[in-house]
Image 1 (cartoon, rainbow, N blue to C red):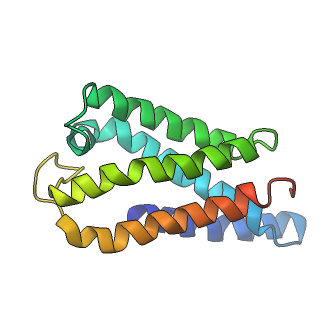
Image 2 (cartoon, rainbow, N blue to C red):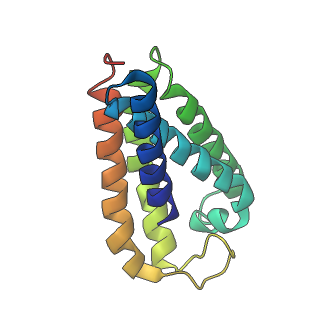
Length: 153
């Protein structure tokens, strides 16, 4: 839920700031700025909550290292999505990334993993009713702001 608040909150603020400075609505630019903020937020979370996140993929070797790597990927994507030369590639890779991390989210929900406390007292499978549509929403967001509109502003 926090990620959606970050995304929509930063989008609204960025849209307003861009309108004030340019006197035009730059929704794709504001959307990319918001996605970059979300990726920074979640990327940093990989380092702050690495123990809980590693529980999501505890069945894999090097689980903590994978968590750190995906955190670095998210921070790099936050930068890449804002640079016009790398926007299209970053957007396409983000779409793939969002698909690839979905099984880890499903696993975590199935096992009631709480990322923040590193316990097994999470929301459980009911969380997927929110998380899967949210993941699809993020993918649509990236597609329209970075892949489809990559040549515009």
